[in-house]
Length: 465
Image (cartoon, rainbow, N blue to C red; front, side, top):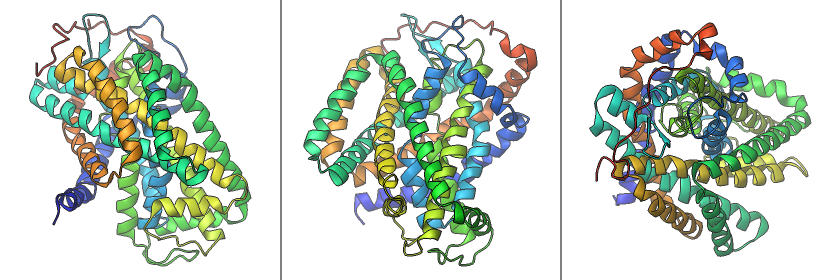
């Protein structure tokens, strides 16, 4: 067995039941511990578009949210849903949706501790994330180092090279533009954005993310209206297939409950990143008067990503497959299934898919750059920032012109592994999370946190230098 095959096998095992049990179990546990924090989703949405200028932080709450969404709303919402359906059947859509419902509690929890234990650099920049929660909250610096190392490395694969390859592939396949040309242009654009740091990234995200999300959602609504005659049947098929192991027709044959559950959970967890510790890295830079406010705002990211966008994608795909039985609903290839389904809709189907994939992939490159940079700074200090920027732009170009099977599997594996130290932090600090949830409840949500944010001495050196 080759090295690539070994990595692929370990990756498939990790993203099977081990991570499903760990992550979804944490989702349920934190839902109970926080008193079903999901009930505050509409309050959280209102907060996400409310500025808190008097609070400490580098970017607005909305800027932090859109930057986090820029990395989660991506190919996982489109191709990932297709993969879940192709491998697990239509019932996987329901299980994917449930990861979003319960995953909001974990996203809330991991963000709360990231903001609570954030620090300032000597130049006043806010820095936080799972590594600081592990370091300052649990005195487990070694585990914080493990998380930061995994995140900073996997960012180059899952957030950089793989996404660049997706952009190039779409331009080449649909517009016949040579990969080298797209790679050069994409590298230059990414370089121009990230050179300005978090403020530049959030400015782009605040404009790009709402546009691409609204464009995609409107497109899905148009397709669902066109498929209105089978929409009711699609909903019934999704619900029945999640609990029964029988053929349901319309291109779906042989899906089982176990397969639907596994692939729905796995792709949903991968899509919204709840429990991975990624989104809190940027949430820690937000202007917020107390940890709970930003935790609520971050929770809306999972709501938009999975509860809304993944669900709409699933309904589009299942309704298209039912309406056009010639499409193999269990083809085993999510990308092909998604393309076939969207192409059945004249005029609007493929343009929506192409624009969605390209803009989502580009925004993911920006969001994951910031994640990787923050983790690299924790490890090696602020002097690594310019080096990381250069390496990132090089990574975008390399990802545009080479095959990435091994890189994808390695990055996917590290992405799964980084969830382990983050979940440890969430579970061991669950008492702190509950205490702050109660402290800032009701009218006290407007209270300012009176805890002084410590200044990180020798921030240029990092923990490994």
